[in-house]
Image (tube, rainbow, N blue to C red; front, side, top):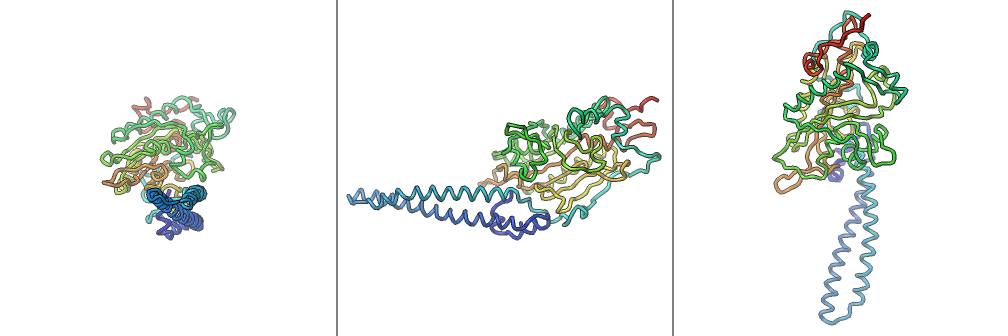
Length: 423
């Protein structure tokens, strides 16, 4: 959530960001309008409270001097009724103002390209895209032919975009998770396995729930939602707390299952395990002082780059344009892996700086000398395992139908390749 002072003092900054994101500029005006009415009523309340105190003093003085104060008693009796009425109006206006304010996205960083997704900018490419000596198959076809993936049976029991993983691909999944957790543990990240469900008010501390409610699963009859990423549960860990600045930055590595509706169709992306309703992910999350957030952003990005290099896949970093950046971050850099079977790059991870947007919503502060200020939060997908496995299989498939395993995963998986099916 943005600071209301920013809209009061510099509404043009927010409007410019809204325009660059492709959002309505008038939403800013609505917030300001509600806020002006709220502040005007607050002035009335302050005056009435001051008047009430003054009348109390006059009544006490009249009593001491033995004078009648009937008119003062009558006026003093009317003030609480007026206060209650105005405070009720204030509460309604504040609720409307804050509801709108919470839906306004973060301010876009100056370094972000302005425009739709066609303005996304490739920053750097890693690894070589090799031309296959044979016609590469899609990961789903390979895994199903090896009896390691069954989406047909999963569709019967759960619906589309669910899956059964079997045999060596299950071990590979666990291997990737273990490798990523070990890597981040050595980098002094605290490993966390968070709750897979959060209350509505807690979840709304991490993101504008109104904009994302159609993409997340709600538990029927309960005030609980399945998390779409460990980021939201990690953000909630210090909700309503004041952090010690000497202990920051606080770096967490969250491992969780994630659940998303993933509405709509995405062509080949809906096949296999690339775009699914349930998946595992290792997430990096940081709480830090404002002056350190961009340094932490570079650290998180470098961690994921090193993890991806260990997977021996070609990939690239891409800074998202203003209209392609999510509502919460001020800037996002995606990591996209190469898929030979599709002859294209696909998103595998994202690195985002959210500044104080989440901390303000979740009331997470730190002691800064004699003041309390909001922390900055950052998040980065270390590895989303189902997508990474799809990319690994796509890149490391062999002509005989076998799949090579990256060296970094050998000791975790217990094998160096997934053998081809015997003819």
